[in-house]
Amino acid sequence: MALASKMTDQPQRAALTPALPPHPGQLKTMHWKVLIALLAVIVAYLFLGAVGFHFIEGPTEETRQADLQALTAKFMSEHSCVNPSNLTAFFTQVLDAYQAGYRLGPNGSVVAPAPNAVFFCMTVITTIGYGNLSPSTSGGQAFCCVYALIGIPLLAILLSGIAERVKSAKERIQACECWKDKGRVPEVVTTLLYFVFGILLFIFVPAASFTALEGWTFSEGMYYSFVTLSTIGFGDYVAVVSAIYKFCLSMWIYLGLVFMSGVISTVQSLIERGAKKVDAKIDASDLPSETGEEPDEAAHPASKQNVVEQQKSNDNKGDNGIELDVLLLATLPAVAQCFDQYPKRLAFELPDNEEFCFHQAFDKSESRDSFLLRFRVVRGGNNDVDFLVRSPTGEKIYSKLRARSDERAFKFMGGGAYAFCFGNEFSTVTHKVVQFALDRSRAPSLAEEAGVTPPTALTLLQSELEAVHQQLVRAEAAQTMHRAREVEGRALSDDLNRRVATFSGILAVAVLACGLGQVAALKALFGGAVRQAKISQVA
Image (tube, rainbow, N blue to C red; front, side, top):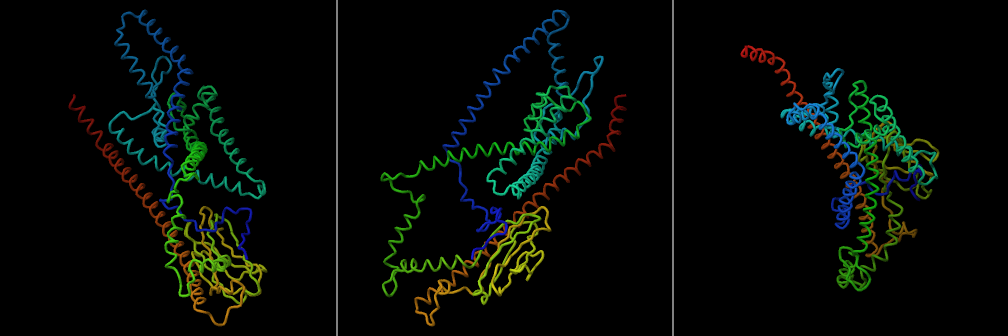
């Protein structure tokens, strides 16, 4: 009587064990040999990049330096009255003004940079930092630090949320019925489509736009697109000269960061897979060989347990001289058969806007038994789902809407396959984690589970075994419910922590905004009077 899922083409959505987070003690740290190897690879990679850029960019830099020196010498020869120190100071001021965004206009006029504080703030919270604009006063620098400290985490949360939605859409495409019985093809296809569509939309199309609007070459546009979306932000190319498309440029950067973070995470996962394989090989090589070395108790706890059991074997005997170890081993098949049938335990994830059904077939001989059905929503949204039970003919015999938990006794008359359905169709964004249990109201005896007619009178040993069996069934049910409550409490605690952190961040931003607003209001009210007083004093 196996419990089967209606959606057999998506087995990954249902698990036979509760979805509990791993214990911190179970987290495996990377081997120190792998860490040293990765450090050596990074150092070698840095030197390789330095050598590559030296040979590629070196001749161009030398030519540019020689041309600048020749131009300076020619200017000094034609204008011998100019002092070299004054010329150096003049060049320094011109370079500072150029880096601040000033440009030369027609007839030698100076064009000041267009004020765009929003675009500058965007470069701050995205950590791009082109370098062409930066605060020059101590107050502006302090405000920039505080602003970045709050804005960078907020943007990271936003981008991670968008990335999760993109990942969910990708999983929906993979779960489509059209990919049924095609193995690993859907994952490869969706990943390839993601890369091709992203590169086309966020690299090639912007590069063509920059070529037309900024006067760059197509390769320079692609270079700028990658440097911007990877948040490298050298600042040698900045597409803010034309003020027409600054808003579109900001939207492109925000959405492109989501795509580029996915690309970088994919490359990072590939590198981590290789590191884990090397780590596993090192761990395997560190295990003791079969050449006479003593086994490690941490790696082989079973050997130590066997020694302890052998030391206690003489104390574990009953009145008739029967070892309890042998007695438990003899009754193990019956107990295993009992747990293989009932109770049934499932913990599964219920996606948003979907219905998930399980089917259980009952024999006519079981129609006289009473079954206890229990479920609990342990995670997701308001922790509620729609639940209904259908008979083998499709008739709805029980339903409960927007329920967090329920416990009800049933008698399945006539036998057949009954359906237990959980619906999350009212939710469009939140997944739910549900624990589902189906038990007999009275646990069957060991003799009933073994298919043997129960004796009218039990011996002392049989009575003790039956009592142990009933206690094991009750203990397992209680343990499952306690684990469900633990998961629910942990999820509520994590959600509360996130809410408090979000509220604290919003409150800090609001307080900071109010303070800045007060400063601006005071400056607007009294700034004119102060300036007028200074002018009067000078006059």
